[in-house]
Length: 177
Image (cartoon, rainbow, N blue to C red):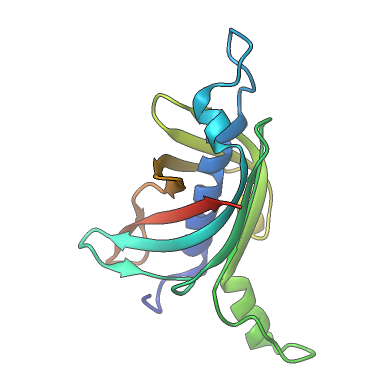
């Protein structure tokens, strides 16, 4: 990952992915017939992150959380989503932690929750963020495009600018926990 990739863009990507999952799983609850739509039913549950990377417009893959990221996504099927993710390393700190260790932990961890809605026709999950590690996300809509690859849930962000020269899409892969 390029060192100039800023924390805000990284966090925005993470939040957007979680928002898409929330939106896909539980916004409406039931349809006119009283049943839960298939897309929402298939998204609801607890998901463990198995991969996360940016894919740049020139095909490069950047791994901001390392090769084996850790994360959990909970979509309750009733309109609430909670997402957390972190780097696969840097999980130990001195006691008390140094300011540098605290800053690194904050830069390599993302968490948010909120209400979601699903547009099944467009395969879009949108989460209105209620609370987040990064307070600038509160009140924002995090949008994710969802699909399934076998049993894996895939959430993708819109194309975003990572720095002055790089654009990419965030890709989050989840398996049922």
